[in-house]
Length: 81
Image (cartoon, rainbow, N blue to C red; front, side):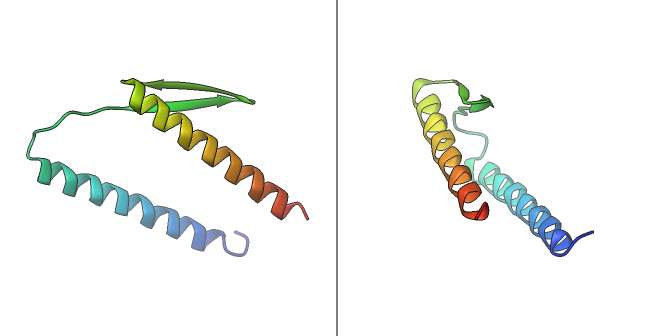
């Protein structure tokens, strides 16, 4: 593998493990109570398809998709130089 690829894989696995740990901790703290809401975005070309279990979740998901799209564009422009 190329330079830095192994390190990136290790960092990715570590971040996934942290995420799973945080999910388990929040599940234990909730004690089976609570309401779950979900949402997501599928980006096909320039068109985002947003879905969510409520208007609030869909709006937050759309905002995150816009922020991530702008960040990817800025990163692409910065690395293209």
